Length: 453
Image 1: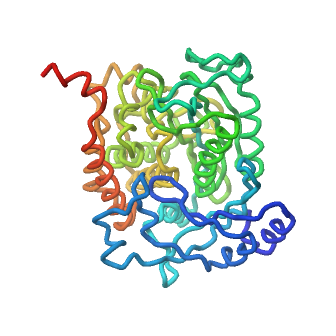
Image 2: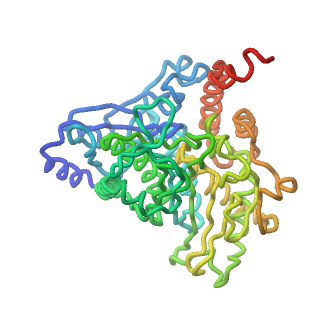
Image 3: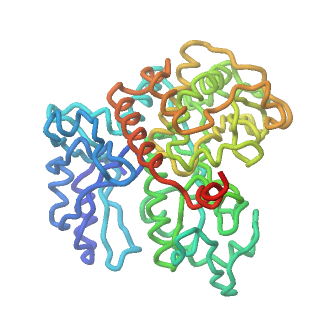
């Protein structure tokens, strides 16, 4: 959708049943935060008259202020200006009454983008590609679980057809797709209403786990918008059907985790795929991009695995990468080059979990690739065979949250991708979250240690 405010308002005025609008920004955790306003305030929102605290972008996962943030007490928790992203007024049909959502971005009082807003971080990387006459073409794959909402600890849902609880992994199961057909139909309808290019759906490796792929788009910001909006609508529609949906990276310790895989290629000004050399191996520029991804992967791990639970997914032998490696048609590595027609030659980045912020994931991936291209870096040799069996010879991703936080704080290339403001905000946010987790003892620890040590 374009920036034609009048057209958007005309559309809204024709929707006589929409009485309220959510005006929102996306925070560092990928959570939409904002205000519920009367629909007659839409023109005000589109003109940038809505204000929200700049600190809103950096709240922790529980919605708490970051205690050490300079955006809160030191500066009086100042407001920023919320400017329209141009995405459109997006209808929501899974609530009790029809409503709509307007995505916004945060700006400073002087009109400059607030670089703690994750959407601006991605926009800055995309503009650097544009300066080189290149356009990232991006597609995403998001996995999620449907779970029983009546249980505190996740349990697979009851089949709408049989009434029985799912109890086995159903990779590519047509039966599972058919049993949840009404839910999936509503997901696709909502995607169509919001302009999200949802493509194929599959039943994944876990009980009640699904993956929905997005079609490639030549607009990385839109691809990230799509992923953020998709996660929200899936959760909403799941509730409508009596389920809950989770994008936790590892909701079950003994089942597959949920990933957020990103495919991308680069087009030049004439629309040619600069990764395509007519063969299977790809061009030198693709090799440079791969090298950039590998070289920056460890310090960007906090973006790909932003939560305590995230690291339960990144274990050897779990269909998720645990080391820094790449290869052709190899799903055990972090960076895969899919086969097929050379005109569609692309890179698949397989590290991020479904719990990650799509704006930051794309910024880290595209930003790392760009550094490799700019520096003409060369990748290691493509790995052949099982990456898990060769881990002793490979560099590892951080094994825990604390290590990832420190790596992002000290990363040599982080400030070549992100503004110092966002780097500091994310580190402070994650440290606060980690400290709170450290103060909680789990039931399993009590069962294991209470009377045995």
